[in-house]
Image: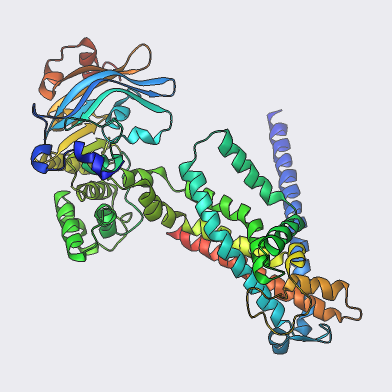
Length: 276
Length: 284
């Protein structure tokens, strides 16, 4: 649990962007259970660094559960159990001795419902850096400004940094949450249906933002919205529930491929709107 | 047929509302009655001297300052011990325990703690604090005794307040590599603080009214001078009220009611304070 054990999670940014063969996240025959319930079944896939990967599929097919494998957010559910290999940067993140706090610093997450803390906009963004020990006001100011600029919300909030994070619109709140994640300088950003609570214009802003961020960050997004997956992602993973109600990976390929020439009949049925 | 049905429904509704209104009146009227009666009978004894002097002639003359101060000290002492322990236990119960038989047993024990008669806490305090820890009959022993009794309430309200903090806030914090404890300290506790505080204030006002347990652990009817140290014996309003009402022959009745009035005013003040805290924070 100590930082010392974390040597396995390499810290030099030069080596960390990707393992030798270019992938950043990897699932190998992963199963996830909640008690007796088999939520994710036998999923294997590699996710490349600095790209956007969309996870699509009907409700209840285990998309969010799968996403939460990458930052061990399922750990919060006492009955959750993971089998198989989950790698970040070539390291098995479920082996004993992994510092989950350190992992989540490097693999950040944005949620479905914008969840700014009930504190000022400034404090929201500075929250992570402060907890990680940065006290210097000037450095914090810089981080806050940089993160808000990166999250494409600086111009809208620069004059009201002292106002509550809850006082701005839903779309702005979601970008504030993205800024809050960026402020701790992660390498991966997991997004769990980040636009499902937003109107179309706010959604487009987030999508533009994702495209820009993907030049520096590895982004994995769960979405209900197939057009969104088609618009924004490089790779698409299609999940579906099998006969035993467990979520399975049906097809994983370049987004173009999935939407124009799907190999699997089920994928085709889903993207053409025959079910789901 | 249909029309008579509607009529009956209407009538039933009228009856139900009337019954509810009468019940409410049955609750409210006595409360208001008691307060009016108390003010009418005790008002004449209230004076600057009554509030700021020590009693003389076995409480028939002079004032009740030592008892007022004693009660204030007791309330502060109670909360000093009950709040930190209650909050910490509440955090542990809500954040770190899993739902299993042991947790259920502990929760049941806490609920039952609230139901233990206060005189039993008095005996407990006598055995553990007065004799066991050798604190003697003192303000300190009484504060600890009342704190033990208040714990059930501070633990429960703290736990409830902490559990009411939305999970989204915790997740938002954990998801950027903030540790569990830091999340509790910087996200959960500030959110839960108003609820915790409300519970603490109510626990204090309840402690202010306790009579039985403090008799056993250090309250005295007449103490020379004001309490000077935590190890002194002390006067307190409820015990003073009990003694002047039951044990002093020829006690003028306006003095009894005056003491009661001061005690009720203190308790009411704290309850109003709790209400203000709650309203202020709901706005946020």
